[in-house]
Image (cartoon, rainbow over all chains, first blue to last red; front, side, top):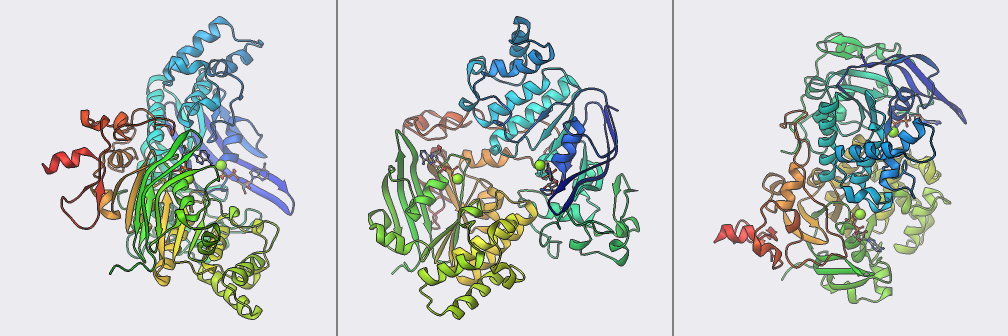
Length: 309
Length: 328
Ligand SMILES: Nc1ncnc2c1ncn2[C@@H]1O[C@H](COP(=O)(O)OP(=O)(O)O)[C@@H](O)[C@H]1O
Ligand SMILES: Nc1ncnc2c1ncn2[C@@H]1O[C@H](COP(=O)(O)OP(=O)(O)O)[C@@H](O)[C@H]1O
Ligand SMILES: [Mg+2]
Ligand SMILES: [Mg+2]
């Protein structure tokens, strides 16, 4: 186990109350594997990410990790100093580690090697961030994340802002790096087709808690939780089945803390118990599902239609 | 005679801003009551084409070609005439709904302004009734309450619904939607796509739907035009385009997406190279530099529109010499 989190909570004080962004999340990440975190915006993906990498402390819960976890963000430009060259940017983590002011010769050699590994051409080493395309900048960010040889990296929507053709290049790069370095990856995304392709395991988040988790092939091909089904059914690249679940409205305010299942308000299978008690994750086949009707044997039997056909 | 009551025809539209050519040659035909998707990667000239229809390009833009609206070339129309058409005959919504909403005024006030000035409705009670109807048409519950809300009090999905209501207030014949769901969650995106489909059908409106996502376009559009580097490279019926892409670029776009049938974690197809910039002068096909199937002619001449199935009259075409080769 390269990373283990148990019962993490994180909330923020805001005018009018407390946003409980992460509400009791546990997860395990194994060496060389990719764990994807999916869910609608505001469900707590980025908050969980910041807690996992140590940018923020959890309110409670425990976190065991083997090494530091560098993070790559969706906004490829935001994390790059605008007046530093690609070479300087890749050297930066090394320079900081060694407490220096400027890169040493060894740093530059290492940075050049990293640039090669992430597919950046030699000519781009002298470029400034704004001179690069979004895809190239994301390569720089990945090179920086790898500079200190971490066992795990976390990427928060790394390809969401990229065009499809470039997205495929970056996903291929991550897959290669995973194999060549035995890298473990935490991958946050809202694109379920992407997640299905690159992840080994998936956590489906809703209002700060996990509703379903398990192997990507299981969760995304035979979803059990009504929410997972609805998410898949909303993928525009899948044709709709007659009578299939269509989610109405948007997730409720994260400020309100209701008893019961957080998805109850939008769930077509809701029962009295769902509004009273909060379901915990229980094993259902090879997955863990937090849903009373499903745990009791409800099978909605939804299987996603193949994408883009 | 052809019904011109709400058709749009764009021919050879070229847009140059500064030293580059941002739109090299856009072609679009939208028949009354039909929806056309404009699909392409970022920078392919989709938004500029949409803005050219609206007459909202920067003043420094040099525009040539034709934008015919009901038989009238808008590129030659006066500023007054264009203002008359804007909002009243052709309306537009954007990726960021806030760009059509003023943060300082309530939703009710803003819809009322449109009804008063654009539609010329004099009676206050009539306008209020119409505003309530518009909000309920776009699926906003508790419309009375929402009229009093300020834009920032609404979620992303709700603000997009309000901006759609504002666009509909002038009873346009053509709605241009530029990436209206790109900033939304998939679940909300689906709701907005359903809403647009319904509105278009109920009102017999035409729609121009701009998106970078082929699957999204196929959801809401009858036909799709694919843009690459400022040129329309293919046009076909939406379902046909996804099943049988004719232009190698369209095919590449589809292949680069992870499919369920791909083996997990195996290398995805990706398009080598990068998109040409507006400053690049391109003699032949815009996609030639990245095309797997390129042959000498492709870099020498701009491919004309080859219709398919060959000789068909439905207006499907691809600008690719391969189609010409096949038909020989
Ligand atoms: N620093 C913060 N202060 C207050 N609220 C926050 C902060 N960060 C996140 N939140 C809130 O926590 C919830 C989860 O946010 P986030 O983790 O960013 O979700 P996601 O990444 O899934 O979109 C949201 O309601 C968000 O508004
Ligand atoms: N106001 C402008 N001035 C100069 N160049 C522009 C302007 N607006 C867009 N462009 C450029 O024109 C090209 C096409 O832009 P756009 O129509 O916005 O593309 P799309 O909507 O397909 O992403 C891009 O290269 C873009 O950078
Ligand atoms: Mg986030
Ligand atoms: Mg655009």
